[in-house]
Amino acid sequence: MKRFVFILCLLILTAGSAFSYKILYAEQFYKLFHLHFYQYPDDTMENIAYLEQALKADFCNPLYALAKITTEKEYERYKLLFKMHVNLKMIEQYLILGSKYDKFEVYFFNKNGPWREDICESLLTAEQAYKTALYYWKQAKIWSEKAWPLRMVFLEEIQHWSDENFRIQTRDLDYRAIIQKQLDRIARTRAYLECKEQPAQ
Image (tube, rainbow, N blue to C red; front, top):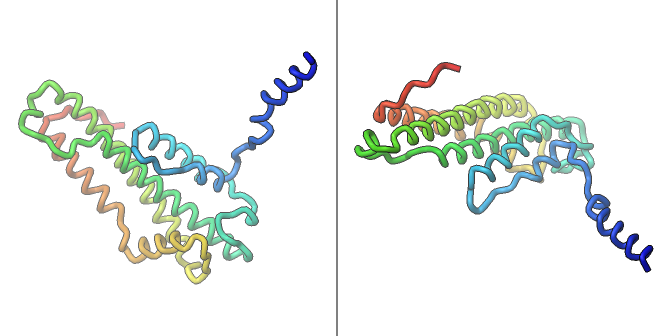
């Protein structure tokens, strides 16, 4: 009986590892990305971490890609669109993160109020998030440029990535203008609150 209980306990303890697997490939990390109903900063940072790993990791075998791949050109377009799309997702996540620290409405009493320094610090965090989003916009444009010559290669499962590629190339989608608008507004708000200038990094 003791032997049976020991074996049963051993099976229960090892059951979790029996069904787990290592996350190695870009597509696996991308699948971990998910939208939360409430966008808390920790949830957004979790998504950013997954997406960063997706950008760094190798691609899986074409058999396990997120689209049906049958030719080298399809695989090449797939990889370029994947990089572009993940960079766009990074932009979205950094914009969400920045919005959590941003102060969209500033009132006259904030200028000399007890929380002025806290507001200034929060605005600086938002500004850094928006600037990081701007970096990923530049990356998304680079990958979009590379994918554009292969635009006639059709991949049904990721057609929305192709749509993003088209919108970037036709300037219908321009995150730079959106992000710059936020940065300009923060600069005006910081000037109004007379926030201390941060040392150059």
